Every structure is written in C-alpha cells, then in structure tokens.
Image (cartoon, rainbow, N blue to C red):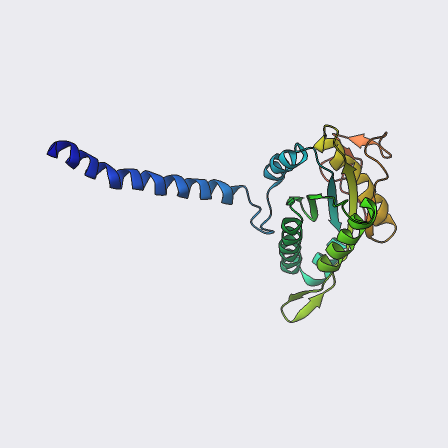
Length: 223
C-alpha cells in the first residue's frame, strides 16, 4: 500500500508539469496565430473563427476594411509611423469586434476584416448596423500619436450581410471587398451591400478583386 501511495505522490508533480506544459504550448500556438503588429488574428486564424460564428445561423455582417492613403503615411512620416497606425487600428478594431460578439483579423498590409452580429431587436436591421459602423469609423479615425505628432487616419469599410442561409465566408469577404473599394473611390466611409449574392462587379484575378495585392495585375492603386 505504501508503494502505491509513494508512486501516486511521485506522479502528482509530473501530472502538474504536463498540465503547465500543455497550457504553455497552447499559449505559444495562440501567439503564433496572432499578427505581431496589430495583435489581431492572422488571416487563417480569423477565417477559422469567422466560419464558426457564421455557422450559428444568426444574422451577421462581414466587414472588409482598408486604410485610405496609407502609402502617403509611410512616405511622409516613415514606416515606423505606418506601423504605429496599423497597431492602433488593430487594437481599436479588436475591441470593437469583441464588444459586438465578433472577431477581427488582419488580412495583410493595411487590410483588415471582421465579423459581427447584426442586432435586429430594435429599429431596423440596417439602421442598427449603420449605427455600429459609424461608431467603428469614429474609433478608427481618431488620430494616432507618434513621436509627438498626430497622424490622421481615414478608413473605408465594405459590408456584406448574411441571414440564416448557409454562409460562404469567401463569397461574403469578396462582396464586402468590392463595396469597400466602391466607397474608397468616393473618399471613404462605409457601404452596406444591399443583399448577399449576385455577380461580382469587378473582374476576379486569383480569387480576388483585380488590382488587390496578391493578384497578377499588381498592387491596388490609391493606397
């Protein structure tokens, strides 16, 4: 009996050690899936979580965001200033998404995405969503302080909504991206797609709107 107790006692710190190691490993994996600059999920990790949210069958909104004139920020203030803007945008977007039972990620460069709930309990669905987007833009467009200077931030947001039908995240991101580009050409703000679906308004290259980074036609003009 004493031998059994001795073995059990010896196993306790071993089990505790494995538990701590498992927790450490999970944290390392999570950190690796976070974009180090913005603190948001990387594209793959974001899409994984976004699909889980969309699978619940409730009304959701998928957002694609782009910083306006970001190239000019880098050219005028330097890339460190651009990094400060990306970092601030990530913190602000992440906090906003979490406050609306959503998730946000950085797609790359100055491109971001988010999925959020659509509250239809009061007023109109579109009206409630518009109010949320106005709040988001107000948060994101606060100037960013960098080395004693205030850097102006401007953003364009495209939105695609989905209802209880099976949601295709890739198609929703594509639609939101198109409308982001549309409103960006008009100077910024947000644009909510009238409905989910329909033929793409712009030519697709490698699964993305022509002109986006990562397509064969080169970088998107306008910054």
